[in-house]
Amino acid sequence: MRGVCDHQNCVNSVAGNEVRVLVLALLLAGGCSKSPDEKWASPESKYPTFTSLDKPSPKNQELLPVEVVKLENADIDTVLNLYQRLSGRTVIRSPNLPKATVTLAPANPVNVLKALQMLDTALAQNQITMIPQGSDVIKAVPQSAAGTEAVPACQLKPEELPESSSYTHYVVRLRHLKPRDVAQALQPFAKCPNSILGIDSASTIILRDYAVNVRRMLQVLEDLENKAEPLGNGPKASFSSRLDGMNGANTNAPRARTR
Image (tube, rainbow, N blue to C red):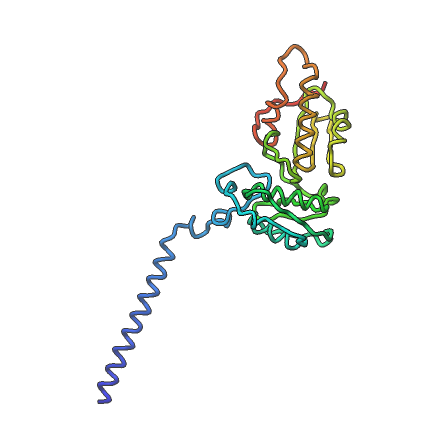
């Protein structure tokens, strides 16, 4: 009887080992079936991230229920937590953010892009500015410190800039006007301190302000440049057509000239 039991235990042990080996083989086969691209895919490919200055796309145009964006006397931490959920970006908070409460009640459903623009504006009213960093981070800083942050150059055309307090960085090359003269004319439209930088040697003006203010400044620049006399006898290109070549949209844009 003892011999029979030993034999049965041996059979069960071998069968158990075979099952474990089979399971391990299946797990390894499943892991190896994925291509290197799938195994090491970047987080961005699985978890899309957004900013308030993105171009419209199917991913950021889906409408959100009003209740998702609605805030009532919410503290800044609550607002930034909502910003993080909507943008898919990690919000890094400055330690010296102003204390405030935010109330936001959209009249109609909005998409992710509009929701982020609304939050930008609500935060800006409380002296807080959002600065995108890389592909998955956004910083919340006091408005007074925004000018010292590294802001990505805006890729939108002037007419695509939103009517929101989304902080942006815009570069314009002038053909007929001196940047220092233009900077004085634009100053009344600026919201943030030190937001207009004119570089005469490069016939370039750099704008670092909220999108709604930059949009107004670009409209003034267009009017001033289009009224200026062209240099020499060459044709006069419209200001809008030349702006389309700025900020990475067209690397073959004509080089600016001073008057």
